[in-house]
Image (cartoon, rainbow, N blue to C red; front, side, top):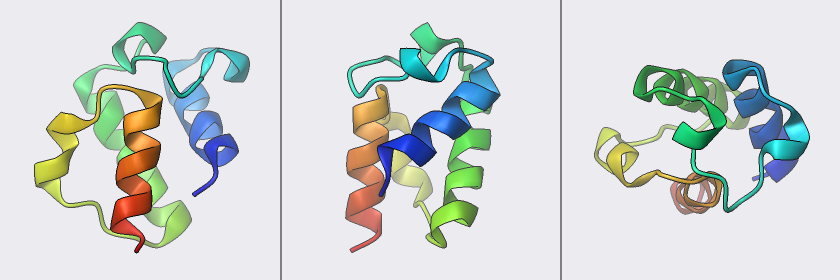
Length: 75
């Protein structure tokens, strides 16, 4: 998984600067609502050709969490 791709999708959805998207950044502090987070996850599923189980979504709070969960799903 590429942090650059994830950051680009988050920045586009949150309408924030890509430099602001760091692994420790909380999604809500970047301006993402829960619906926005789902939208980002759908885009990431398409970008990486993976399927993200719904049960892991509530555990994704930071960009780093998202990166970790995507790597787990991709294995």
